Image 1 (cartoon, rainbow, N blue to C red):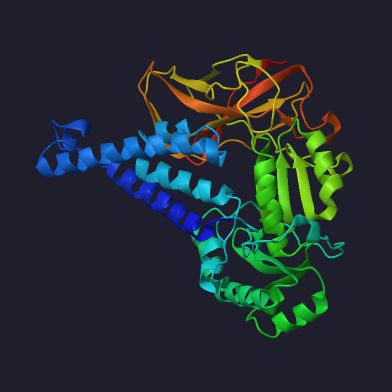
Image 2: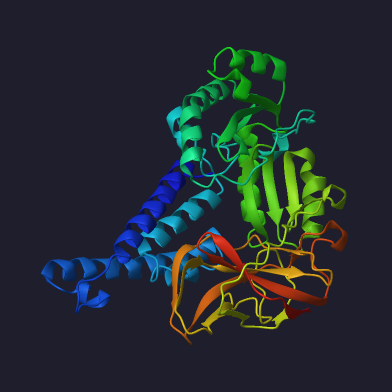
Length: 444
């Protein structure tokens, strides 16, 4: 991916921007002053405040204008949440997501490769294709020893995870250097996560796995934590195909990237006809998903998450702002039947006599069937944490609500069929999740 190292750096800036500003925003103000007065308390603070306002306006204009070209949904969320959080958090986060979605990768140095691995559990960097390389020259290998997938959630930036990445950094650099010396068969490299603090380094090749496995095992410091596996096409060919599909499929996919298994294409949930065409055209050179599940249908398996155990905050009322959902593509916000509308919101109200305070974020919605089983998937939201909820008795506030209507049940197909469902809203609260009472939803 283009600028993957830059993406990792901007993610780090986003974390720094969130943590540092949140720390000072939570400190008490001197008696008799308020937050805005502090901005313009003297010439120095006024200069800094005006500087920040100009940066905020410029960054907001850039994000909204650039989002369409970069195919990033809901750019206005980064603008809106810059106010309660910080532009020092949302703007670097936008840049990190933008670079992660860019279609053409560049060739990293071994040192850079080690830095990029925390971004995703099996993210891969490739040398950009040379001019003149054509898709007609791509002949996918029949894969018999596929690379494994991570068995745990994506790295979360915890101290234990970062310690594991630091320990494996030299080994990652050695794997990349070896792969670049065997570019005619080298596909990808990265980390496969077996737990929150347990990872292995993988390297994929199109053939001669035993030869490369033996050579690398004699070189790396932790041969027992090395996985040598097979990939259908080499890196430059995958990058060439990725660049072409990024242009050809613009507006029709939610994910397009190169990982442990090669080129992975995630199409919107109503694009099964295009998925069939891609599989027929490129065969094993691409791994295609439609909505939340693999394509073709015989490879589709349930991907539903379990409904969290009911948790509540006494006196907190949670009300979704809609009762009608229209089925459409994966990850798109589908409330009120208007695909161009911004995401809806959920209203939180304090119905008790004491204040309610907790740290929250963007809320998500799950659709469940009559039996209470989750049937929908949502891959379109962004993770936004650190939104402070402080409700006086009787007060209300709105948080954004993200709902996806792609099916996560293989038996239902890639899109949920029309019918009656129930919407459950999940509200982040101090590291746990508050679950609302289900409300009836009509899927049309």
